Image (cartoon, rainbow, N blue to C red; front, side):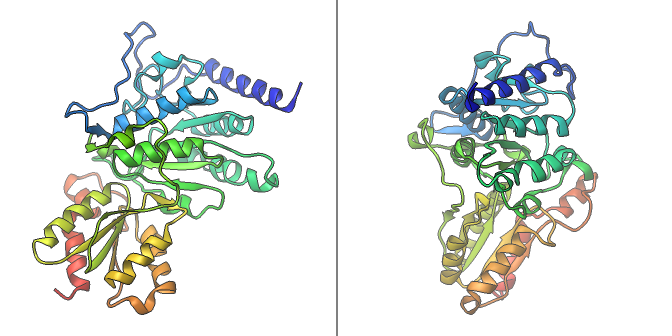
Length: 375
């Protein structure tokens, strides 16, 4: 038997193993006799609009159709159609061999995903929330991230780990953390954090085709939000380059840098500030690692001021890394200190009023911007 045949055989055995252990899930799933739910790409607003949920769904569907080695696994991704309905319809289209419900054991199915990738398959592993992935951090860091290096390049690990990251609403301290900075510190991992539907389609498809392990950090709050998409974005071969940021709005007075849901906050802050005569450039990072330092530095050399915005804690955060980069490479271009807007350094409170106080708000971005402009 050839090495490729051995890999396929091992991959099949791994999948069959999941099938034997997939009865326990976090929430009650519909029975196998439940009616099939058709795959649904477009939001109801019209042909130029797509929800983030449908963008992610269509990206996985198209990549599964394109490559038989791609499969999806995780808690409730199959019979329940996904905890957030992101995998809706995939079981009906591709069957239980390629859409696998798993037990409630993140360490187990994360390790299985890594092993399947080593064997030549291309798993897309869903975490119901990235907070639960802490149960599997050894598999993510010591296995997924390091195997390519430790095998001298002989064993690639083409796996995507995806799910909601950061704060949702009313889920308190153990379900509200942002892990962008955590995973961006690890050599061997690529870390992506999309904002809108274009980001989700282009980045997820690129991640699935990538030969390296990818941490894909979504946001639960924006799953149902619709964004305009062009025919180019809807093309089955539409990909976005990993490691490249996008300038969402051009400006000349200050640069606002963010990722995920906070990009929307920056755009709304920029709109309000424009009415007061302040021109903001807004950068959507898209990729946390590799970080598009060139776009960041080019922008700050034109605007001479910068505000970073993130939901995560401030110490050793993504904003801190960006500030260090600008200080090292564009210090003489700055006309004011870099301002950082981040979550409060406390475990997330449960009370709605305290939760709001612990997270960045649009008004916080506006205040930080005016402060460095002395207005």
